[in-house]
Image 1 (cartoon, rainbow, N blue to C red):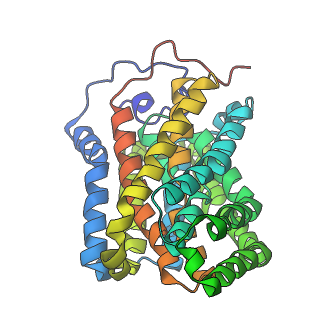
Image 2: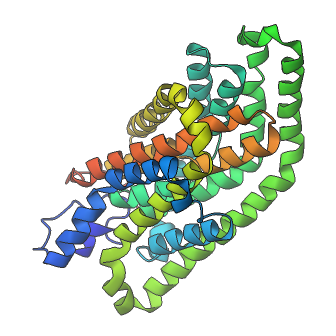
Image 3: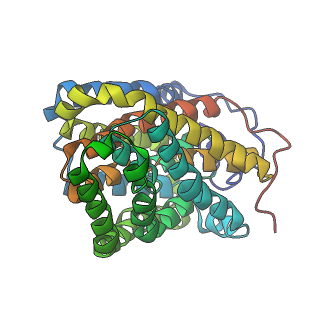
Length: 371
């Protein structure tokens, strides 16, 4: 497939170069393109397998899960050059808008939805927690498929993850702490008040070393594989050209597996409690996608940049929320919103990516990274 159409990592990293008519595709390239555009279907199948046949996907955990994330970012790095990142740094406000959307708009969305739908204290806390999590690696794949700015997406994921060292525990404490005076259901249990507050307070105090490990993991799982991919692109261009056509499909397969695995690990809880959270979690992601996009448009960003910020805002690290819920809260229900979020995030993000993939970048799209 025409490389500009598939990844646009060099010539169109910011979306400023319009889509040209694609070259005639070979049968092999047509099959790869079809399988890639079926991304939402693979996510649905992965979800069903994770819930009803968890043993088929739960093998991908711990070290293997980390390796899978590393390969995912390696596949993204193969589509990039160092010039792509240098271009993005010409306009750091694009990263800043994404950071504000991630840690201002989305947490408030989680809080408002939890309060409006009168969720129980554990479920509301879990929804707020996942809304305060940083961007996830799946957003990089969705950006790639949607013809957004992959280099900007990687930078935003890295910055939001490092920012999570402070922002995630702080925002969770501030917003979920409001459950004490707001949620009438919680008032029936003074013991639960105290326990909830203590959990949130401990989360703020104890998470430094946990998130320090998260920052190190980000370096290992996001930055190192991406840099290796970029170096391979720079120094082995002929090899990269041979495999670049497969890159989006590899990203789709790995993302599907990495989403199915945590679903399989909590399949029983999802069967019992997941249904009541589909609406609030789906609302959270849909609103985040929409607000991320329109905030970018109101900031006068181009279409490609706006797509990138929208996807980054709507697709956060639900797996991190699940891990934090298990680590810091004794009530298992707090982890359920994160598990449901894995499904909604992957399904919504993949569907939006495929939708945008079939909508050309406007010919007069603004270049947000001009010198």
